[in-house]
Length: 309
Image 1: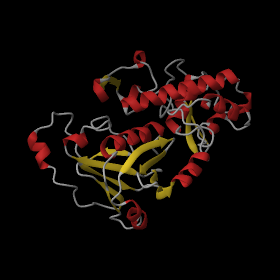
Image 2: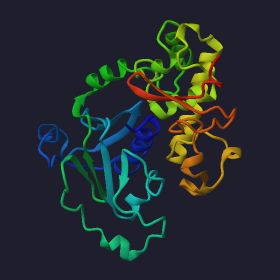
Image 3: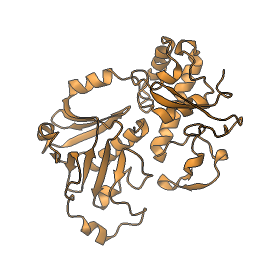
């Protein structure tokens, strides 16, 4: 399932390529036909994300609400102006795909002239958005609905604070919620009502970076440690928005690098994480084999020595 940084990147992408554009909205698959009819022909005003939820707001007061779930993904395509948007050309990830990928080569008049509208839909396209410059297709999402502003507010009310929005008071609200729970930290970090946007990769890496025992009850975490956990979450997820990948290790741990978004030098996948998917391998810091268990219905990777306190 895409984690919060990917959904925020998607919101930025939609804002770049569709904001202010009058869109043709359809449901080639048919499942979203009534909702598409409510949005068709209207101008998209803005795109926002909160946790793993994407909201595309239209000028007439309705929103397209999407939660990708485990299998959802967007495809994009279009002319040079469309392809030059924030997410285009960045490292690929689950939940965000670009049909055209020229490896960052310079656009030419021939490439621009070649765009003649979207291709025929392929597969079960739940919703298609089309402007004069490009298109986006959604497949496989858990949630795809046209909702009112009041309904969007109700969705947000059920979610915890989003570290990537990091509003005033969010840090203290997170610390207070954690302090009131006896649930293990590894469960709280996956609870979208406690903190929105954290998924399995961030969970494992945050707990390791903060040297926290995954089974420590939230109520036993000090307020200062809870605030440090929030700060590290906000910093790490912000890096994810920038890089288009979850990278939790600093450069001194890297052995082999490649180019990423905006020319950044990034590690190869084998060196991007401390514990995630490193079951049985030596901990990068203490040499103890990384352990694997299940908590909150997801695989949890952790170091029994570094995180025993």
